[in-house]
Image (tube, chains in turn purple, yellow):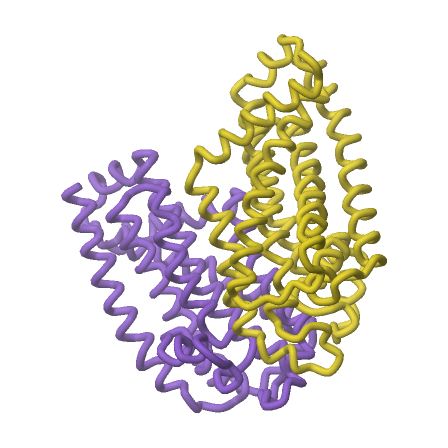
Length: 252
Length: 257
């Protein structure tokens, strides 16, 4: 299984890093969101009731970190669907002795890609004057939270791709994640949201992830347990979703 | 057949081809309204900032779906042109009496016809979300005209890329650049309220800011002739320059083939 996982991860990474049309969108979108939101909206931290100590750049960095983690998984789903359309995945399933290694391999590649993207955004954030009040332990926990969200995104998209095996399933992979991401307190804290979006954001799991990440960047552990308490069971649930998807693809 | 008739025939073809792709059409309709919906709700409190020009953030963002729609549809039209080059259709068309200018403008006209329908849907959608359009009934055609100029500008730049490269993928590849231009503009905040100096400079140099500000002025102010004149002047200049270079690329492509 390990051999299969590493082989898939190597192939996916090679394909990602040697093809600009794969590399650029996944790298550029987090950067655009970060620069666009943190740069244009920095005055939002003067809105009455906005009390996030590290500042607006850090507030937005938490969003971009988790957004890119989840969306990196979606890009992997596109890749899996494309592999099915081109017939590569069928040959792979015949060749692989333990097929669960296929899903693990795609997940590993996504993690590496996301870590690279996040490093760029983090470096840009520091250049833009982002203030990080959390210590090394907080940052390690933040990374673990990001990785868990990344795995959730990958396993969700992989489950869809393995069931539908077509790039036309792209919107099904993308849109629910997009909805969850933007129906969360992206621009202001939950307490400052009003109306229907506050009600939706209050029950949105992505809100818990965002609040956990923002706490860690501010050097606090408040709401972090809630974030992991939701993220880990979700990751397990979507592992089941993707492996049953793999079974569906085997029957397929 | 007159040139105008040729433009109409080729425009109709471009229009029909676009509406036969419901996936792309649905995305171009749904995404801009969804974006307006979530951003306006999420940033509603920003309208409380001192000096914010609109009564609500939904008023302030009302113009953005028009720019998003113009971007998606104009780019899709250029991707189709790239596909026509890729499949050899353009070469076959060049053997007919169709004039070059009709081939280029026909493709743009099809895209513009489609965005005008989309604009009507965005207008109704934005109004249902609570936006208050200050320019009144007369302002609606001006809003549509300026947004259509924006679509023409984006379409002309994309067409230039399609003609130079002959590849739909290359045209698709410039989407992130337009997206960057959109995000590095006064889309989310008026320029005078952008706190980050370098961002404000980029937004000031970015022509997209002036398109957005012209459109936005109709919603939040009513009639601001300076914002409208600047918006029309800058988008017209972009259209003219891009068409000039597109014409050169078109001649070069036909010479090569």
